Length: 635
Image (cartoon, rainbow, N blue to C red):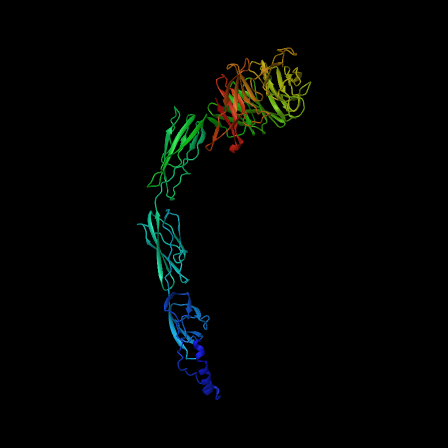
């Protein structure tokens, strides 16, 4: 039989005799039943927990000897000052609370079997504050002059307490004045100012306990890096500076430079203006390749390797500094005669000097007299007459009613203007200034013309008409008169411009085809303006000149219609004047602008008076950005 059942009759009898017989409302406590043992309370073992921990209380070890069911009651006997802890499930076998502040919590468990007086047991829970953990980060390397960021946000407190931060520089290299910024924040920084090791200590505190962690920042000097920049291009006679500006020092240290001229072309006496400067200049006296090397030093370390740079120096060029609208050559003076803007220039291509004279209006075209001592300049409705003897002088200006596309100064005292419109040739007699139109067939608008060396005729090349032709005009009487055109009408391309050889026997056209020049009209072989062969392998001609002394025709190649080649005019070609065979090709020199090389495009080319020099008037490629790109090169 269950032990509890043995005592039921006795309990009923006792109730009948004592407690159940009525009486006042206040009942006395139940008397201890003879032979019934009280329960045993077991609140668990005393223990320590972290602050903020959830404490589990377990009274399941409590028992009643007779096996009566027990009731449970948990209460705080005492709590630490400031604690607001409350018991959860205080009437259950198991209860809990949060140890919210450090200190001792005394919790009492009272159990009752309902028959005996309740019994109790106390358990002491000690809440302990756990120190935080400081995390200053890993040791690292830094650079002088560059801020080092410190981060303590990985620090923590096991109890979840708020923590404070305090950074301190506990060790610095001698001479350092580095200071911390944000020393009381989770993130701080400092800027190393000298080389060496910096020890920074982070202290974190939860208000009671603290922890520390050190981080070491090592700042080493690093060798600078030499960078002499890209290879450069220049021209003989030019001065160009080298530059170490791209060199660097990882530590931001100031650097010094040491340049060396390693190799230079034979015959050059070029030297560095200052080998210890970071941007020394060199005057390149001879065409060829100049090799330099650059080393840099930060005061302690030198660059690991010197950096080489090459300067490719091309032929000497003379930058004119002004625009050129048209140009011819005076063999008598051995000078270029050019016009640009409202000036005429007489230029010595060898000496690189020029003189000039002001003109009344912007120049459109120029022509040099057969004796090489005078020039005629076409303007809008004007023509100027200029003496080329030093110094050049404006001798007169005459009015006309046309805008000339070309002008020819003959040796007969007349100036001939070919209009930009379909009109007669306008002849101006220099002695009177009278403008007299030509007779016969009118040349087409835009005609380009040349004086035959014999002095009695002009040849003109059609423009803006198809098929283009070439035509002859007599000037024997002063007033121009149409004679005849070539016997061809589209059989041979002529391309709108022409030049006549020095001996007067051949006409060279802008399409590379040549024609005879004489006084015999007709279509039979050898007659005037009959086909005389083509320049070998050359379809387009921008300019041509002939030297009987050299026995050659000099050509600036033109731009082909197809396939497109924007640099086709970047060379000169020399042909034998007998069979028109190509004898030599001369690439036009590249021109250095600010150390970068650009293609030069040929515009005009002339033989010197003795035929030994080839003189090119070129224009630097538009990509250079030069406002005055015209230049002279002598070969």
